[in-house]
Every structure is written in structure tokens, then in C-alpha cells.
Image (cartoon, rainbow, N blue to C red; front, side, top):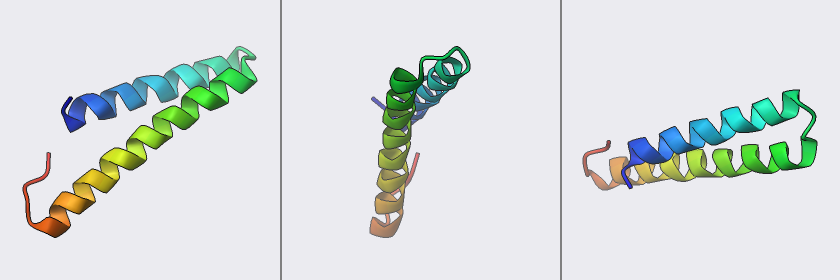
Length: 58
């Protein structure tokens, strides 16, 4: 998958987690938000790695 799709899936997961928090699904919502944030961290790290290595980004 491309970085754009990973970023989109992370955004969907984080929004789903926020929806879960609003509707009282606390433990599951925090887990879903955490997975989304983990994907975001991986994508950002990948972009930084490519930038430092001199390769084109997205």
C-alpha cells in the first residue's frame, strides 16, 4: 500500500475511535485510536527516513 492509503486508513481509524469515545465505547475506542496513531508514526518515520536518505517522498 502507498503512504497515502496508510494515512487515509489511519485517519479513518482515529475518527472511528473518536466516534466510539463519544458513544461510550471507551476501551475499544482507545485501542482503535492507538492503532491509528501508530500507523501515523510509521508513515512519518518513513517519510523522514526517505528525506534523510535523499530519496523522493510521497
